Image (cartoon, rainbow, N blue to C red):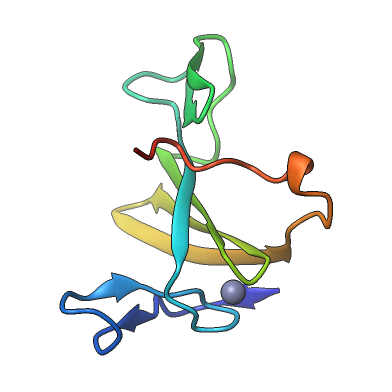
Length: 113
Ligand SMILES: [Zn+2]
């Protein structure tokens, strides 16, 4: 499923907060970020709850840098915002999915206290 806007909730707390593009719930967790081709033609960096993962040999994606932000919402949705640089523009795409029913298979928040 693809969505085109980035929903922000301005009413639920005293600050604007990211909302889930599927259900508009405002309990959203950052679970990962990725950068493909971070500064040269090859390379992939991923940050998630397990730490920083670097693969300097990963091939580039498209003709420019690809940045992906991964989130989950507490209603059981996963959504990713992808930003692909291409010929002077930054293309934006949102990909959504259902989280696995088994909580042990769900991605964890990158960091929380
Ligand atoms: Zn949701």
